[in-house]
Length: 308
Image 1: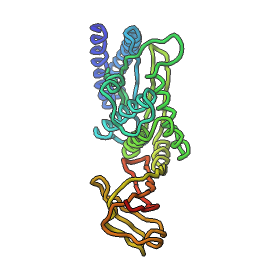
Image 2 (image 1 turned 120 degrees about the horizontal axis):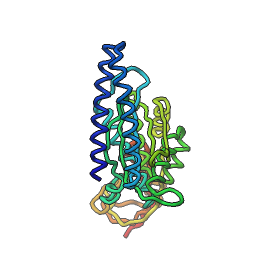
Image 3 (image 1 turned 180 degrees about the horizontal axis):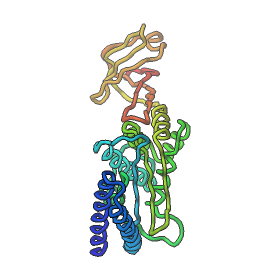
């Protein structure tokens, strides 16, 4: 591990020197000394990166290179950069958790899952807005590990551009990763950013993604336009404290909660309704789940009432 830490320090020093030289060349573009020094540093950088790939592989570390780019000559804010990288980390963790334990409805994950999917920072990339990250990963003779399966699934998900595609992925991983993917796309759209991501093992690119702002906008719109309706019918005993026969609305207290909604037109016509009184109620609950936001619209329909 000491050799890797020493190497990372050399890489960071080289990246810093390259950045300073590139800035100097902007002021003195015809300086042969500066140009020659930059070429020399870039060769050193390539050599160190090759060593880094070899050492990280021997220490069972996969490498994730994440570059952010803009289509226009603009400077993204620190907030947009950090928000994009953080939402990517959270999205990856949720996708992994969904593959391992089943579709995710909520965004909470266990401490073990969070630790197993936490990217480690290695160094920044000169000449662009980007970072090199590491991920401990076992070596299999055949096939991909679940960590690799998660990044492949993530890359497939972010290429979606229709509500149908989004809904299909939601069936596989749950609504929580879809909502986090919306946040990741939204952060980049707001800042005019695109992403280029590579997952590498030694020199081999195992998975890659290149997504531009227009594609991120299409992804954002598709998620925002997608929702799911869930219907559940159940019976319970509650106290009817309000009913409007003309408007066909009701109000029932049940286990300390207030349940309000529409009711069947037959209620109150075939038999009188007393208030307040305990009734055995049969109710349909319709829940509309929005894929873009932590929001659910819930409506209740009272089917029948029977006095207790």
